[in-house]
Length: 360
Ligand SMILES: [Zn+2]
Image (cartoon, rainbow, N blue to C red):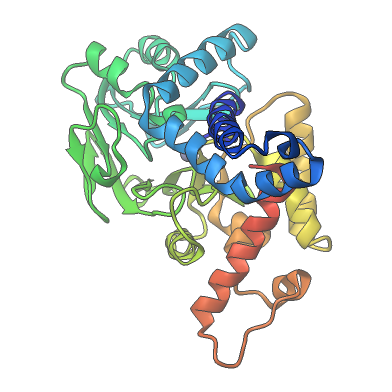
């Protein structure tokens, strides 16, 4: 999800300012309101409520859908062939096609080439995904939705209208549009030779899920479709969860086998690795990956997939257990503090710094 959403934030700000003006006028102190010091104090105190209002408008009202539609339209005009160039990969008859949508999202098409059946992950722009289905000559059997944000779920209903037999999978907790099959942690989804396992990974939203395509049965690496939980060298913002919840979700990813391919929901690699350099300037793995990412992005090439092994080497959000990171953040475990609580504190501090660093 792209946030802050300035247009929605504006609505929130306007609403709050309107209420404040009315309130202050009633009390006869409107003039002093415009005193800069007082204004700044009020804004500082209301920053979080304003953010919550904007977020609520985005996720729970028609305004969010209207904003998403506008973003889709703008992205199609700005990037007629997508924001990046992505090369499909094929391993033993299973084809994975990243589809660049909106300004920096990725949807994915996973195809069992023997049965010509396909699964779409987070098909945010139904037109782009439909074009890919037609080009490949495959049938859409399932949509796996990681979470409710429109830039991941916005195409569910449009594609369902075109493919009535297709089911939309996701967490019932997350209010996903078009959901027809709700999933719990470790549920399986089978389509042809494709076997996915869903993992419940709250933190970014209350019902966020990730999907692991089992590669072992097919003689190749597994693939993780991580939505907005994990990105190349990053993790999602904790819009609806706390650091303990997010840590538990990230540990689910950290426990996967090292050769698992990571297919995230956004092209954030360059920004994320730039931030990672702030906290781990001497990490050679990070620097090498950064140089490679710069070369890729200079040609607008997709930076996915990385692997879980790579992420463990440079993604600070998967490294909350490491003393060098604690030192870089100036954090120490209190004698009475549980190890997991301490790691959650480290993760919370990392996320806070990232929020301030890029607002993402
Ligand atoms: Zn999101």
